[in-house]
Length: 161
Image (tube, rainbow, N blue to C red):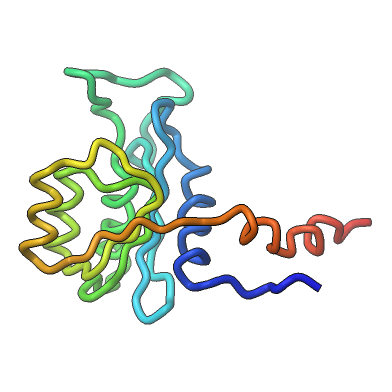
């Protein structure tokens, strides 16, 4: 019998990966999960403003190498909390990619106490300095193939059989 319990960090990071699959960005799919007291308070993925066209449908709207249409996953998660009245103070962020400088500043202002990420992505030196100065830990999380192999997907994927 497979061990069905994975560590918390991997549990929430896998949720961030799953959330990233909703991304409508053609350049990079990013998912973010905000957690407080081992409870998910919001998820976000990168994509267009609700009701606007998506990059996956019409292409990116690039200006100076950046897509003007895309809202970052971290921002979408924070905005979801704002929209539904959920405090982000002392929350943790699980995100598939190291946050950009603008997202880092926003996360600090929102009171995020810990950032856990899966992949390095143009890690900005000033963002790292801000995190250090504010005593916010940015920790790279690893997911081992063995942890993936031990997930009980076969139990759920064979329900109709």
